[in-house]
Length: 157
Image (cartoon, rainbow, N blue to C red; front, side, top):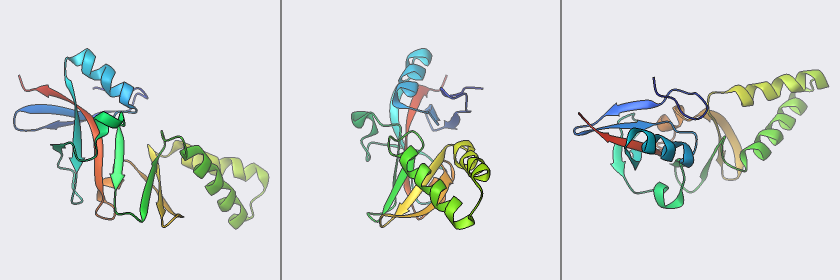
């Protein structure tokens, strides 16, 4: 089983003439995998609410040195757990949640546990307001989102 830098399972897709791996935790993680396996970096798009990948260059992940990007319209912003602003948003969400629940301080630490341990969490912002927390995998099926991931492509043997 192939894993990313956080020991999470990589997704493996068999296309017509190649095998593509996705699910990397960073651009560097994908580069290291490509070097190790003798593969090349590719951008993979998941569009139309499905899990059928296609090789693309629409989001410019390789040029921008990104490993993940979601587009669901100008009103939406998807903040991946590896993005610099994620911690700020997560901390604010925990404060809001604790205030709404009016929980004692000890329970606020338990609330932190939820976001930090969600599987590859992504915060969804709509029109500059929090909408939800989702996972990287589920983002493929939300709001007709176009999800782009960095992949490593290998020829089929």
